[in-house]
Image (cartoon, rainbow, N blue to C red):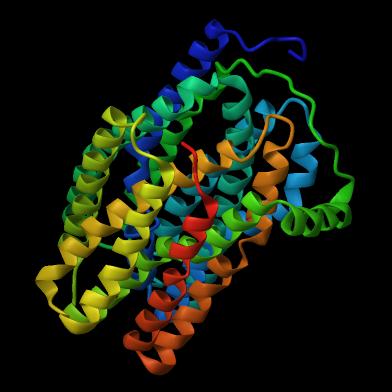
Length: 410
């Protein structure tokens, strides 16, 4: 494996293998959606704004903690495929376990023990996903030809958009047809099965071995982070961008809470919000696929920042229940544009030798997206939604400058 060269045949095999994973991952994605399904489940289990903050921090901050701890280890491994498969299996078992727990605690809806155990399983799910992401990105970067990457990201987004469109319909029907907790338990069980099938694609990957910069332990990793942040301008602006614009991914769970508390939204409305979020992903993914060679990443990031600022400002001045579906349409734009751009930029500013290292540095340095949801939950609890939205907008506004400074070439 160490001597395997990156040839067009190897690249094509990996291209198709990653697309296989994308197809079934897409079908599972909305059944375990972190912006709608998981927050709605926590609220129905008796959660408050503080619980939503903790949930969002786990889902976003899990990457930070996992990458800080495991990046030095994975960086020193030439072969990472087995660790990718291990992490995927952990996600499968955690989803199946969450489904079982919901059935088990069906008669203790508002029990603190229920929420504690649920958060524990969600933590395993989140951390294993972040662990998988490190290997996923590294193998993708070194085992697929450069001129195929942007095409892959766009094709993956189209496939995933179609898949999540189908899964959104399934999720919406399950939410309406079954009561809590059976509806969420069934969704998570289906997601676990689909995620397991998706993992078959990773078994087919041909990993290209590339030497990496060795890091001896977390202390040495911390020294590398400080050095790279001081000396590497591109990486520094990338990290600052993630710490500002990255907050945009935490907005949707709080909008779910806002809608449930303010407008008394039920399962039907949650399914509708999910549907509009998916529609946005389908449209954006299709457009970016056809114009992938013409659209630079910084244009996508500017659009992400603008939509992220517009949604809370509009809600502050025009709080109407009819506008919620458009907010989640905007949320779909934010999620799709941010994910495509941030992954592409990371590949652009790294090499095959330092990709996992830099992914770890990025994750370990992304502290604000990890702690902001908890802070946001506390702010909502103490001061209300207006204070939260104002702070959110103020931080995201800084991202416009960091996008300008990053100066993407592709």
